[in-house]
Amino acid sequence: MISLAVYNMKGGVGKTTTTVNLAYLCAQEGRRTLIWDLDSQGAATFYLNVEPDPEMKAKNLLKAHKDMDSLIRPTGYPHLDILPAGFQIRHLDALLEDEKKGHKRLVKIFETFSQHYDVAFLDCPPSISFLSETIFRSVDCLIMPVIPTVLAHKAFEQVRSYIQETTHHPLRILPFFSMFDWRKKIHREAFDQGTKPGGGYLRTCIPTRSIIERMGVHRAPLPVSSPKSDCVASYVDLWSEIKTNLKNPLPR
Ligand SMILES: Nc1ncnc2c1ncn2[C@@H]1O[C@H](COP(=O)(O)OP(=O)(O)OP(=O)(O)O)[C@@H](O)[C@H]1O
Ligand SMILES: [Mg+2]
Image (cartoon, rainbow, N blue to C red):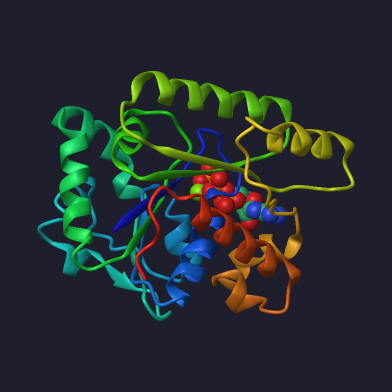
């Protein structure tokens, strides 16, 4: 199983929107795909029209390897399941810290997931915390939506340096520009800077578009709610580019 965390310490940059659309495209290709909603806002759960389990507690999540069947829900889309979240999981971070074995815990959970899934997408909350540090140590790849502004890029650089200095795990980091507007000179400059050799950014950008924002109204992935939108092609291109940049090829 390949684990992909959609992460940025900044909030509102498009992490959840990206997770839902990429996971849907991945599942559509026939891969058994899981979204693990790790954010107590439960936005991925909401977007997929799944009801969070009111009994769900953070400590249950840490035992996901023992009790997967009762925690994971089908989304109604072929090959796509979700481990939903609600406000109750807000203590996950503290629990991992108490555990002092967060990384081992996560690896164990991934081992169980890998018996059932080819790919797991983690929709991460916007923070840099013990949870995110545990994720950096445990997943195969970080997909990072970055808004093309100077401060957002600075935050990305901070996280990338931090990971390179502290994590001895061969983590692939794939940033891309989210909420991009080609009409803005500053966005075009950010693109040129980010995609030049050594810049590290993927070349596919996701535009700012109200049709993407409306996913919250339709509560469905974009290829389902607006299949004719040209924005679907942007997510298809992003997914293709991510697949070609993974260290190991995706199963199947
Ligand atoms: N490309 C886009 N164009 C226009 N609106 C977008 C785009 N991507 C996301 N949005 C909107 O921006 C808001 C934040 O998006 P999203 O929830 O995906 O971000 P997030 O990084 O997961 O946020 P959080 O940090 O709160 O978890 C949502 O209202 C969403 O509909
Ligand atoms: Mg989110």
